Length: 176
Image (cartoon, rainbow, N blue to C red):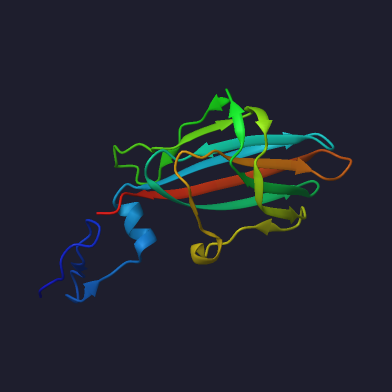
């Protein structure tokens, strides 16, 4: 069986039992190439309080998707572009291919000092009984600008404590 040239480093393989060509989609391929990363967070927030985290791509094309949920009470998640911030606690993104030695090119922090929240791009209200985001990346994925801070603001809307659970995952590519 002959195969087409490699696409971003991936060459289709044959199923060992049937010899049929096995193909995977582009996002799945990025996982196999070691270019897929994730950061997760579970935060307990008091009534009317906010929690901030931020991501800044550095040179590579970043395709990002978020999945968020609340328990206890609902809240609002806002993604803003072009924030002005400093400091913050660095978070090391986890490579989703546990056998890969590649590291992410993004800077990711939580609890930064914020001077300007930037321009809101997406605001989602999430009830405690639901979640936002989807497993279908094509409808939720955003391509982030390089060298630009993106601020994620999580706010509890009700008068009681709530637990926020979030997952941000992305893959990084350098076009050939």
